[in-house]
Image (tube, rainbow, N blue to C red; front, side, top):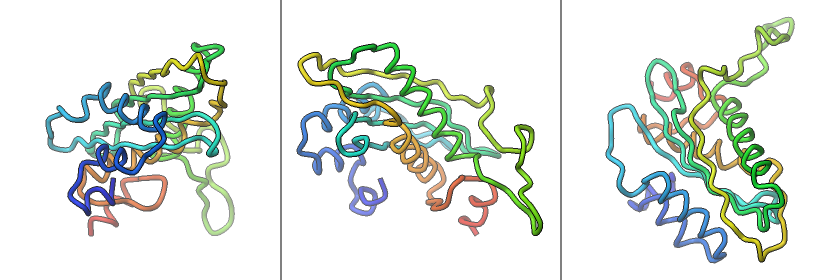
Length: 194
């Protein structure tokens, strides 16, 4: 998204121009349509970003669009995901794996970090370790592109990288400032804006 913005191009169009693989293009095109990428209205404090990757260069193709709301904290309100795993042996299992991975990636991107003081780790329990709460889980829509003629591909953690990228890109879209360290916390946002 950052390179596309520097060139004055739409982030989806920029990616599509770079991608020759038709399956990669298909997930990017699909998630753009499903999320309403081209028809969305700009709203104050709301940002959108896209991420794409092929899992471990040989696994599933996954594209994610994130919508964030920038208030006192950053909140991911929605994720749209398109995934191509080849022939989906268990589509419900694939959808669950992708959704769960995306929610975990949101938690990593916005919250998770081992915290410590001068003497010890201070985030040493479930109560003190920062993690996404159920009340903060975004609405997630997963579309599995049907490819019954293709060999099955690993879905594993296919959504993790693209989700983190989409969230970071959406934060930059909402704030006009790119945060380069994770997690994207209020403190890091303030530091980037000053």
